[in-house]
Length: 362
Image (tube, rainbow, N blue to C red; front, side, top):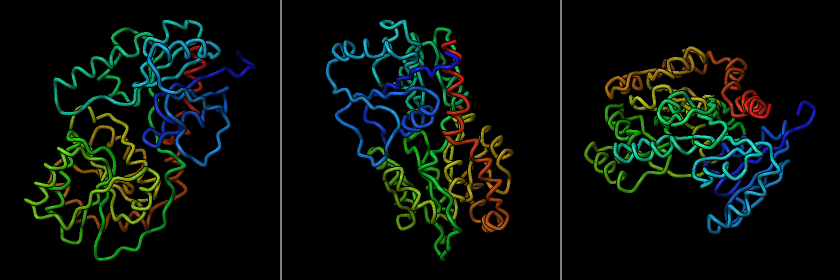
């Protein structure tokens, strides 16, 4: 294998490249430089895209799981490594192909807030990689919560920012109204209501834009809180494709990377910090263990930490003008960009994933 590129198949359930989970595309684009790569996507067609890829994308029409296995098993045997994800339905595929090596890639843990449901789902997750040769995790906290029941090789491959979605923005022209932006997960356990309570304590010049899909039941609860606090005219909820979010980030006065003080988030790689800074926007975020580490890496002048306290967060934002002005006056774009590159998908994938593959087949 020293002088020959080995063959890798990325197996996903759904369309490729997929706007909901761009990590599939990022892995494929970057690892294809070093391996012979193909994609096998189970779905009804390829996601519309103007991109041209230097690898083959195979589409398998959905059918019964038995028929899909009959098609996929012989197809996979020509590859050295099969890289697959939760939700693909192929957790027992390694039993039918012992010629290839299998890499199972975890990207989330259930944190719905319903303890019984979370325990049930996360117990299932612990056994999903049972027959794989290696399991990948996005962070140590994810591994801690759903580490395999049986001992297999495990590695950390963080999800970085997608370099083709986020770009440097020039300094915005601020008006009397100042937009604070949050985008990302909006399920109940992310405690979106706390940001609304913070808004209630902010000066009237601030308004809040929340971008993300909110469950209808949860939205009812949030709307009741908004009306109770009389914040209706100062908060906007939007849902949009990932590649449109940049247009809103570039107009943000401050980016709110809120992470609640919950154990499962303490050591989690906080992707939104990277995405905002990649657009050259100042960030305020909560003092999780990971964020404290990240601030030392990225610089105190680039990111503002605060405790997960409504009063403290409100006070920090109300007095943030100095921090924001200092950010734009002292920002060393070249140095910041060099630091951010280390948190990109391209860096993590090319630096780590290829070596993980080689470790399996040697």
